[in-house]
Image (cartoon, rainbow, N blue to C red):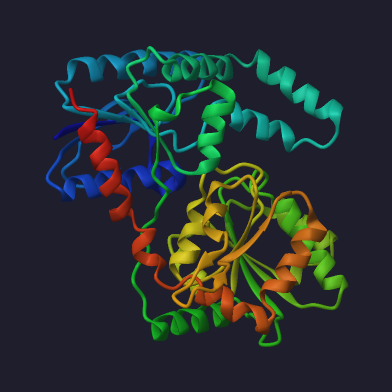
Length: 394
């Protein structure tokens, strides 16, 4: 098939939807499809070999005017490109198949409002959003492309959480929604190799042997992903006499280190920063923690499970679906982690982080992740997506 993939910005190094899009494109290419990426901004050097690129510019830009221009331009490319089928990762473009990797714009804004503490701050944020030209433009485009009479034939939801958003906010009919759980790509690693990675990371970051638990927290937007909750949970754990160590991967600055120091927990944190060595960090940790205030389906949780590490996440992360009880080969119920519904409940997070690493429970959590590698692979995800794209042809 000749397939167009529309995305507002394309730079896989930024992670999230862009990295997932690159992985999807690679899988489609491997199946001998002709793929063209239609982007508001992208550099040809960031695309997988063999992909065609149509981009308005190289550098990323923002603003309502740029968004509207991209939407019009991208829809024109789709209309006149002679494509067999089209896929859009963004609500700004109406393709045959819409896969909103960021969930709905409306839910994203609601959860950003929920970040604010207190009714007045939340009302102020809601008012500011209502006056923001770009957010208004995004909401208008979202309503347009989710409407029953749009050219969007199928909407691919990454989780049941996204399905709920589509139903509640836009009353999208069930027959337009296809659930294809999110996926990831992780290197295959033996127990021996994981052990070597773990030892190397522990030495590099001086992790004490008497640590009561080693946790990985990874986020490009720490505030939205509950970084404050992690800090307070660690403070409570230390106060209770524990010795947790948290590996922090992502965008952090000196301000974050200063806050940790003032809370008396700086020695319990390892600020790693942005890294391409996530596989080694999963291997180095006991548990991945992510108290997201909003996440359609976090790849961090999925990657952790693929690497054999249980996770703790919130009720506002679609990937928490994978942490729910599963039935093992002997018919017993097993969890792959813990769901703490409220991302701001620091005592609840401290309790969960303490409980999950207890020897009597941890082995069962870790064992429940066995066999997930294939189930959560990008190959399996694209198997299902490819069928939806094929059915949308014409």
